[in-house]
Length: 607
Image (cartoon, rainbow, N blue to C red; front, side):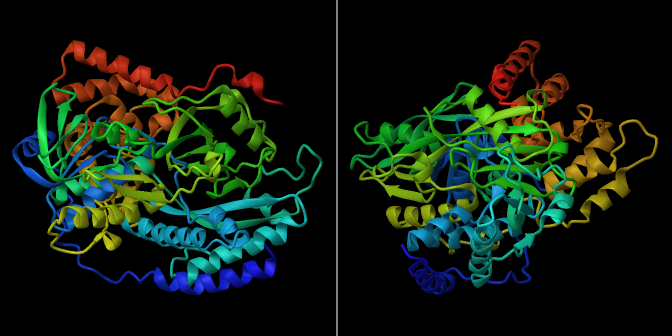
């Protein structure tokens, strides 16, 4: 396709698409009617939720408590529907906690839209840009802006990337979804912003300049837990560690509920619903086959691996680095996150498993990719944690590689009424949920009391949050020279993770003398364990260490050090026996083994 043709198509498409998803300015709204507006309110206890699941017939049963399922539960409940949600593991236990932590508008889709004159790809960009801004606004404590540097080592890359990212800015601001303007940064300034960026790569090519653009960054599993807790406080009956054993149907052959098992107590019971929605991500086909074994597959699983490195791999100013094209044509990010640096990702077909692990080759690929751009020696011994996630890509038989399968989502309504939501990405979880609930209302003839409300719906923790909240927490609870007192770094961590709920945690810390850090070098404190058990459905040690806090993703060794105290505190809160504590400890250690770097990766590095 010619450049002129591409520009003509893009100009027309931007005008049309921009008008269709124009971001309406967020006006001052009264959120006092929200159940979580009072920061002392907490979700109903799990025992109460299970009693509700047994007792009631629901409008909608959602299977799966990841981003899509939790988002759909919140959307449906805010429309006035009676909603149940069950999750076989913990909220965000799968793919939803293993992302690159980016809220991105789809700059790569924009490139495809231009060169292929593909209006469909452009629509994905507009939707993603709109949802990016919405996601940041609805959970400001969990998200923010991320300046990202694109190094250019060839002369033509400077105008190419500059023009592409300026087009990205244009698309964002035409739709009212802009969050920052890209700019060209000359080599001298680039070295100031990102001191460890190489002047000259191993192939002898010198840096010609860089382009800095803006996307969003967030804490994925905290966002997921916030969605689930918000849904529960709004009226959803939600239960983690509740496995679907089989789907049930009425005399007309329509799905009308599920037989489930409480994996903690072993009790089995039936949940009745007018509509059943399958939001299980990479496990979607398993649920679909419960309904009809002969169905074909909808999911193409793709593995994405990330590694965690020390903070000194990223500059103090919070700038990320993107490797736009590795030796084999892939993209790798290196970005600061929660006091560390994460690098990734890979994209390869893989089998579906509950505990994916990174291979030696995948880890080596990431380390080698960033080594080519950094002056610091990338060492195997610097790897603090490694994790693999499986993307639930919507299958397209015309594609030959997972990289080319669109991340757009699919809402499929089966003949027996089962609704499956597949594909998508974190950035567009809210739009996916909206489409899914619209389909459920139409399919089941459900009587919603209101239209979708989630576009301007702050999540639990966000209503009373301000960027300066940590100062209030620090001033009220820092006591100089008292062992275990909450310091400024802890105050910043608590407000960033829990928003206006941080005050509840500091109160626990003061009243029960639980202000000590769980492990040296990290800001997580003992009071968080008690709070998460009480207010966030935290039922196992790794619920806390991997998903309520992110310690397992940040530092496996530190997580193992913190584990005994976490088990002790959870055991006290949940009444665990000695043998239960031992069993939970072993299960946690088995989980952490999947976060360790493959032992032989060092030998695969080229340096």
